[in-house]
Length: 178
Image (cartoon, rainbow, N blue to C red; front, side, top):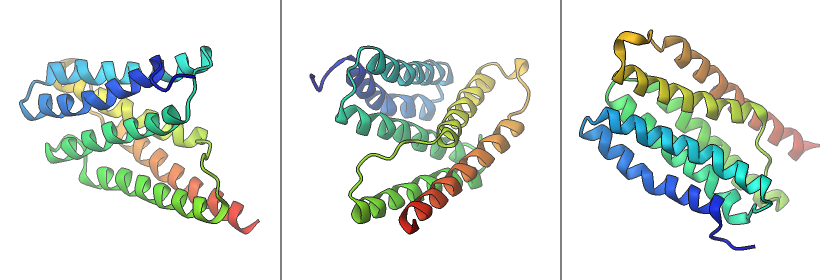
């Protein structure tokens, strides 16, 4: 199975798009930022789907796909917090959750020598909520008069993010102790 297959290429394109996305925000080209973000989100959905349907899943893809998501989300939330589009506490919560999960995975690997931990539906829901929130904010910036405030989405994202972090902690502790 080739490492540089279509799903992995889509993931790499998403990673390459991140500095362009950040630049569009910095230079206040919010229309282009929205287009780049939507394109990146579509590649996120497509790479996994194509990998499963064509049976082209690779260890590289299993590693790069979540990393691409994290890089895009963390870059976005940091910039959105700087611009005042999301509360700083939400950005800190998201980054803290990711660091705790990453540290937990590292410890889990050192203790149990397990490389791949299956993401939970709660974790996937948190990531989806984060993506939806970012896309919604970009839509709202570009079409302010058409969309209401994002406060409800912020709270849904915060609750899912914290809940998924707690879930992974509890699951890891249960596996380690039992």
